[in-house]
Image: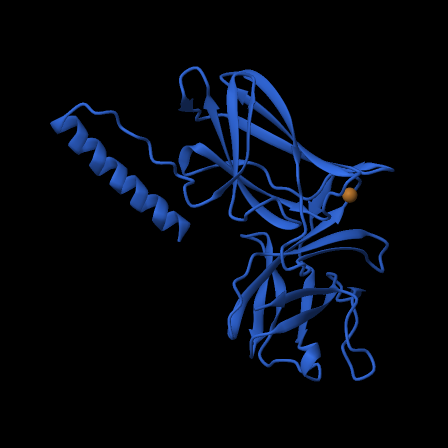
Length: 283
Ligand SMILES: [Cu+2]
């Protein structure tokens, strides 16, 4: 959908361009290719203005798709062909740690760069996140660090979970953004292994078993769910989530490794009403 909008914006822009050159020489206003997104940061450093855009209203725990533009302040134009890497860092009272993140790649428009960050906890009065962007333009290296205000989602529902598996490994499991409907929904998640405080590696070929329940209605389940299995192309775990009515759902899960051993989570039964591994949603 976003791609379609970008294409339409590009077409409108090119029509505007050709008519301008024919009829008059009024200045051409550049369409912002990120007009549909929310600017969550804008800061000046190194004679550049660095803008970060998000699909969400703010930096939120869980999966954040982020878009970056770098403007050269002197020429007031956006820079293409920059190489950017980033390091999110949480400063906690006892230690510092990073979080799972992607590489940053150009996103169609040459001056737009894109990637994702999965914050696993919010900041608070004493503990905070910052984001360091290291970027190179025409062989010159720059760096900037900005404070981030990372918040819990407005509905306070769990979309990311950090846990130690029965194999003594720390994992981060994050739900991909979803607009739930009374239907069988496409549902996906990303799984990372915490190698150390700064390094999180994609974990492949596990499986996430799903058992969505409505605790307010006798803990009933739903039919035709499909467990999440690893998709090498998208690097995500993909499956189907069946939601038979609106309301609050607890998505109970079990994580299985390549040998089909349960790493985390329990079966939901009459005696055990929930798994220790779960996401939540309400709609
Ligand atoms: Cu932390």
